Amino acid sequence: MKFLDEAKIYLKSGSGGAGCLSFRREKNIEFGGPNGGNGGGGGNIIFEIVETLNTLIDFRYKQHFKAQNGQNGMGDNRSGASGADCIIKVPAGTQILDEDNKDILADFTEDGDSVIFIKGGDGGFGNAHYKSSTNQAPRKTTPGWSGQEMAVWLRLKLIADAGLIGLPNAGKSTFLASCSNAKPKIADYPFTTLHPNLGVFKIGEYDFVLADIPGLIKGAHEGIGLGHRFLGHVERTNVLLHLVDCTHDNIIEAYTVIRNELKEYGCNLENKEEIIAINKIDALGEELAEDQRLTLEEAIGKPVYKISAVSGEGIKNILFKLAETINRVKYQKEDQEEEIYIP
Image: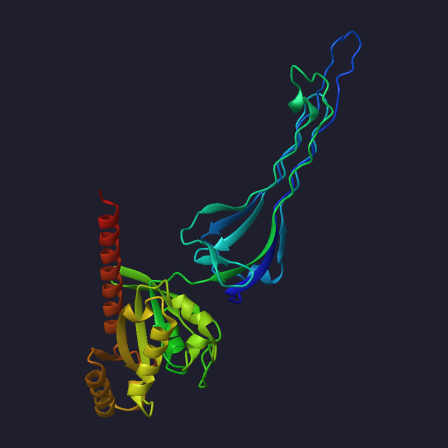
């Protein structure tokens, strides 16, 4: 299934049915009176979060969604049937933005959520509604209220435990493929990966989901290269695994470019827990790889690990470190939420 993380769709809720103008006319019924029923309400536009979805690809083939109109009222005090709702199924992590693709109107993060996004129009009143002691034979009715119509953008931000970041060709897809059942495209040129990939990992008693974010470059927060849209997938992760190609001419610059992009993008990305590893150590040999590790570690003042996604060297250790960090961050968040809600 092809990955799609942004789509524009058009929505229209159902209009309400008109009220009915009717009088009771039967043999031997001296006082018939008005008996026009009310119109039915229009259907709502409802968004439903489905666990089995992880892409917006369905919205490439269908962009228009319309709820059913309510039926008109009928005689004998019969109200019209309400219009059927239009239920739109989206994956967890979907945001709804306005037509200008700027303001967030809704944000869905929990599986099974169901939200009425646009309410249908109310049905009109029949003439029986207006009967009173001073007006025994009203001829007044009202039409149904029109449904609402709007265009919105859907934006998907992957919900993963950890995000895999780094410059293009840092070996992120190779790492994902070697450690999980994910099958990303792998080739020896930049921007091989054009859409995020998810991999499920199980190491010891831990299991977690890792998102491979397509290669970022300098200026990505301004939309350069693959654009800032992929940085959005990092927002919902708890931990970042930052891979740096140890064969890069300037390993320090390769690291700082990504860090600067995270800072410029905002949303507190630069403050997320980060695990740093230099990849492709099999291409340099033990001594040169250790020199590169020490060079980067001394420059940034953080621990740096050595791995080779091809040979598997250091992979198990980095996965254990990643899993432990993810669980620690999760527990910290849970403790913070309990402190917030405890009176």
